[in-house]
Image (cartoon, rainbow, N blue to C red):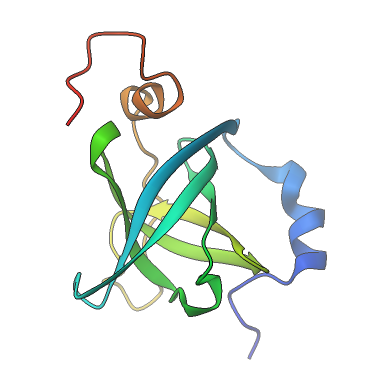
Length: 127
């Protein structure tokens, strides 16, 4: 059975098949696992409506499904691990990991993207 996490060769071939444009950012966040009993820090390196590239020293410990939270910019979403290379991971935002086949893609809103990529613009209440 093929692993659902893409190997680096497959990732590079799929890089140009993105549905949403990614925007480079550098925002700290927290990865929550095990019903929020375990957490560890990470950095969001780039983001789109459909997913993100994340850096964490504990990339090898990230499970297939987890919550990604950045309270300051109002991001709180379930993620599905799509690839891992060294200390970086690629994720797809999903509605929840509840179904047997994994989550259904759940893009985040344009407002959430704006808060994260350009926090100085607009009328956002930062937490």
